[in-house]
Image (cartoon, rainbow, N blue to C red; front, side, top):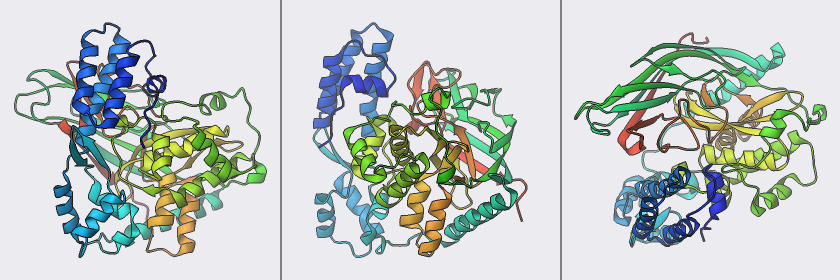
Length: 483
């Protein structure tokens, strides 16, 4: 059964101090779990009308908008999903479909008496259930992509070994990102504010240059944990509002040559240790996480050995699954552990939580995966181990290698898994070095994604413009292809 988190925990997750409205928030949370969304919304709306404290109003508004976001994540009836499944699964029967429902193979919620299905119900069947994959109608042919992933890992590993440096084989990219607010997403002549993600400075990501923008852009500092280009444009009645940035940057392939026998102890006064080993939003040291940590790592206290054990366990035991919007989930790492599936960011937060619990500094890294044939928004992680410092770990790629890279041999799949612990391909655009960070300049309203920053953020008149009212695209070209 889904657990209702405490109001204190809710305040921590959304970075809002606890003071009042506990009864309303508790009641609304209970009503939501029971499926009484309209009643929960009414309670929150009434409380908002009588609340004067800005921070408390923000907390109530977050919960009210969260209900609307959940509704958007569950758009389909059972009949609609059944029709989708019939088009995707060979020789599926009504009896099978009903058995899958009973077995919990679909993400379902009762909302005001209606049984509704998550918008990616059909697609997630193929991620979670191998017996259904074999019956997929018109399955994608990923062999070329999978082979290129393996080849890229080999090339980076060989170059790092021969050069004696972890940063090798840089690639330079030209990128155009567009974020388009739908027609009438804001009143006519109203200023729409936009934040678009751009590359942050890292040792492996350099040379950022803004080439052009659709309107004058304010570029955040290169060390920002959530780097953006900020723009404003007036809306025009019945027309979409398009924001765009064009930029160039370079990204190195990464492969650290690590050895557990060379690990050095942490300095407890090191700011990295202080800042990246504690709990925080979606990083909670629950009893379940503590038990899992003990099961996986046993008695070893070597941080490199521990982190690799956590990574390998996730690679074998957590399945990939398209996600609910992060802003609707109370504790993402707990969600991923409980469900035993998640998307790249949910898997990353589970890994970060396990590492931090054991005193291993770990942090978020994210924005885009630009690999040819596989471009998508993406999240991964970094861990800090002395004497090497920060090194990349991509839990999703470990899962992808061990559970989904079907065209490679078992040895090659293990090779891909091991590469992405301390290694990374060049096909990344990393805008973020932490999660749940604040945009600059500050956004007046709620964030569409209050955990991550990949798709851009929009607002007008101090109110958020949510994902259902805008679209985004990223066009990537390699400027100097490596032979």
